[in-house]
Length: 400
Image (cartoon, rainbow, N blue to C red; front, side, top):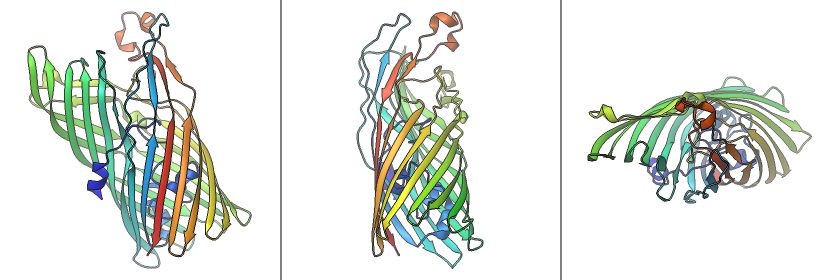
């Protein structure tokens, strides 16, 4: 599963920082991501591990398709617009694989593998200077966990997360031409709790630790006196996050879920690339991102025991300030809508979800005249950032 996930490397998407607004679960995506109090299959190892205590043993096989067209248009201090710049965004399915198994009436174990953060973008080289032409900064998580039913209505859960970090970058005169790549492994954890307060109301909370992954590799820098082969180190500091939510039965067939998410993107203070043995050419790119918040709401209408229809909406805040946003990032305040359905027959259930994320284009002003000699306060890439995000999830769940 790890080799499959790494082979299908993640592609860039749009969200607060480096995360898709919704991911991994077709059912969760179709509820607008309001899933922390609903998750009760193998994807709960990501969203809320305590939900597995109320799950049926089963195997989850899912795939996500992300279509994320985007355009960056430079605009100078006089308001003159440059040529549109659009990256290549290959459309490749991202797998999500998981399993839940019963140990006893109170204990469930299992795990999964999926891509949680990051992306990859490639811009055509058109003679621009001081730019990142290609970048990949992503993590594949391999998760193992346990869910424990403390009482018939309250459960807790925890996971151990192994993060496989992927990092590549190719630049033109930023500050030199470079072609670098590195990989590494880090360890994190997650905790969750679910309380079925009544037959109609469920309350839940989950926390995911940050991941620090020291990636190592090699590459080449094109210095004024010739190319320099280097060893590369880059520390990925993926953020911690927390979610709280509720799910409420509204009548016999309708369930409403709500959720509030927080992600600590403020951990991204800088992107540092170091070269052991060649410290004089170490690179540091300031980021100074801010924390990200999302509010989500979803409805599920169970038309019959084997058919459920779902819909949701959410607001997802920006995490990247004007000062340090560049064309490889697309971030802004976003509004999303989602729809989906679930069909069950015997031991099988099939979930399908679709998600559209939009928002007004973001214009970053050229403030060079305002900051004067304080060059460090100049916005790195003034211009207009626009794009859309379409996500599609399909999952097959087999009870065992």
